[in-house]
Image (cartoon, rainbow over all chains, first blue to last red; front, side, top):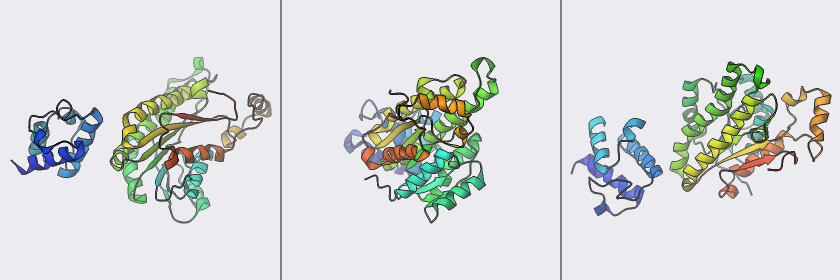
Length: 77
Length: 246
């Protein structure tokens, strides 16, 4: 697992208070991990901070799963 | 009660009668205050009246999008944090609706409503992360009751109440409250200019029998900004001597 993936998962675990085992790459924040829409906004904020990047609103809207987040950060980090 | 020690508050329109009193009152409860407005000299005068440390002047023209976007960061850098936002800046361009120019509609809506919302949006991030924040909009009684000659102003103030309720619903779970204070007729430079006849007619509509004072509005803001008001959100606190009981 890449460094980015590990860090993304750590943030998701901490922020949503879910078990690490549930945070698979294909897990959807809302459908599988119990996030609400505000949680997803906060997750994006946390990713921006962790990786020192800016995630524009139109890109943020497409980050629905753990993998989406990892892919975006790896491509733009 | 209502101790604001350690909190940092940004007040827009801080050189105006009500804005200056709000800044003074928040400061008196222990908050660090940032004074925003376009008239630097007037802001400096208010800062000098407050005196001491914990006062910062942050000039900003809220109709300039870039300046507005930069303001929250400037405020955080100057004060160390931004916990309380008071959207007080507002202007009037009164006229009967049939005579109201498009530009007078636009300028009032832009400053009173759009800029206030944009600033609220911009400060939310930091407040949500801290799980504590206060956004307080100074609306007006006419936003609820309407007033002849003020279609633009009333619309902007009603709009502020509307977005505040929506924001309140969105961020309540993060410890951020969003409320409004709605002054009635308050003695300020603006109302001083009214003719005696108009003043008398106004007083006849106020059960308390007098105009309100700016510090009476500021007291409402202090309450909403306090920890004691943590469970109050999405509300409009009317301070009007009983002029409208809503």
